[in-house]
Length: 290
Length: 189
Image (cartoon, each protein chain N blue to C red):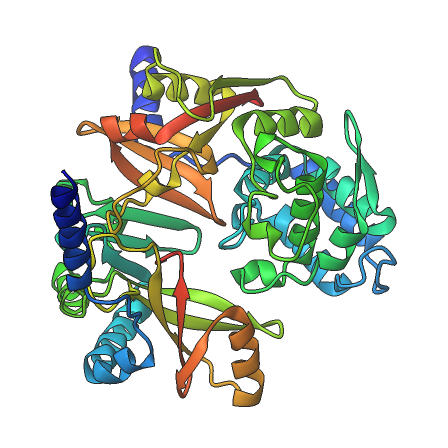
């Protein structure tokens, strides 16, 4: 009898649609309370172009709905957005503490360093335009630019200081190692990674690996966005990774991998051939959260 | 040896001179195709009201198309290269019919439009939706094409021209008509 009930439960749990990870309600409430305490109508002396109303509204929206976090187009902020989505899901309090400190003092202490911001960033935050909803998300503009300035990888070697328009260039780009370093620095957690910038792990069944890891860990993928939204309008598409996403769930049916992930402010679902999936992935990052 | 080199170089020059010069699409393209573009826009708007979606081609020959269907929190992707059985159930349950989507696909194919979808634009902090139609930027097909797209943008909210036009010019948009703009972009979506 009990075995039957157990089997039935297993069957229904398989049939039920996988849900994206939920936030801890208490941590979320504490983060929202902290925003209310820090709320101020006065402009920060460090950030002359940040509108306080837009800043605190953006902060609140991010904590209430991490799903809608959007890095805007055509910026190079996808890596920062993916790790911020992760932070909003698992540690919204720290995120809010850093944001309010940065807003009030221009600096914030994370686990291994102090995040600082230069004059150029102070002037630029709040002025980005033609990026969709990011135009009015002043907190996101500030946060992504501060991260870009404080964490550098080899992709940023040629352009280390910010100039207007650099949010769309390699000044803001994130390579795989830098992404994992940022995650370690911001979360203080043990971050595991497989893969590299130019080639994914060779002897690895990506589907099985992602599926297994996703049961205990939060999985983030470093992939080729051009292959994700394929087009053959032009001859040369560089086979390089360009994008970071947070994987919610992965499944397989009819020989296709079904991907369910966070990307550009929405949950995204798509089906991909096994071979295509393999071609797409360059790096797999996983962090123990469950 | 020298003679053959000269012949080789001359034939190269002759061959390249046969290709039409690089002429980008501009506002003329809109006026030349205005009736068809307006019909497409009207039909797309009617379907979008039933279910938000974007559609476009994923190959040069306009054989396969990608559909992105939006709900409040999820976007579903499907490419017609895949078996129709693989369409997500949520997409099947939408109020859009296959015939309606095929009709739009046919229209964009006739216009050689690569992608049709909606984007948010913020002008002075005010949100306005824009329907974007993407095409290849060059008027003629050339063997080595540059990676640029000609995008026609139709703004939904009627804003004062004094506010909209200078702002959008800063964004790289050129005004063609009332609430109609075009831009050249590196991205088609």
